[in-house]
Amino acid sequence: MGGQQKFNLNDFSELERRLLNDFQHNLPLTSAPYEDIAEQTGASENEVISAIQKLTKDGVISRVGAVFTPNKIGVSTLAAISVTEDKLQETADMINEYAEVNHNYEREHDFNLWFVITASDEERLKDILSEIEQKSGSQVLNLPLVEDFHIDLGFDLPWAHSSE
Image 1: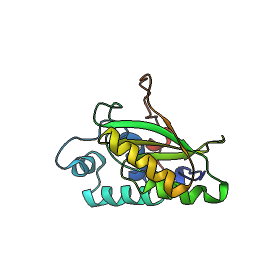
Image 2: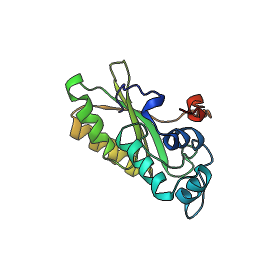
Image 3: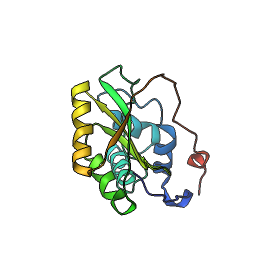
Image 4: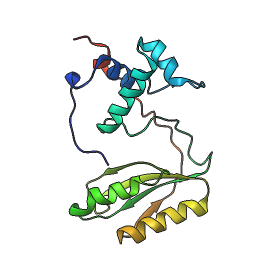
C-alpha cells in the first residue's frame, strides 16, 4: 500500500525521470539490464541501480520486473480484506512480506485493502491466503480471474523529458 504522497518534477533527478518514464516497457532482457539502461541514459550502472533503490525506498515504485499474462506461469488472484483504519498499514506491511504479492492498495469499500498474488501453484496460493487470514484475523475475499482483459499499465510522464 502506498501513501497518497504527491510528487512533482522537482522531486526527481533527470535520471530518475528517465527511469520512471522510459522503462515502463521494454526493459532490456539481457544479462546486464542496468548496464544497458545506463548506456541509454548516459549514466553509470551504479547510478542507475542507486536511483532505482532510492525510488523504491521513497515509495515511488514498488518493484522492477516482468509482468506475465495471468495464470500462464503459476497462478494468480486478486484478493481483498477488510481492515480497521488503525491496522491498515500494519496489515499492508504484513501482506507485502510475501514475495508472491505484487502490490496492494487501499480502496474506499468495506473490503478496503486489495492485493494481487502470483504463486507457483494453487496450493501455495491457498496457503498464502490462509496465512494472511490467520495473521490478520480477517477473512480474505479471493477474486480469481474470470475473463482476461489486457490493460497497458504504462503511461507517459510528459515531465520526464523537460529540463530544469
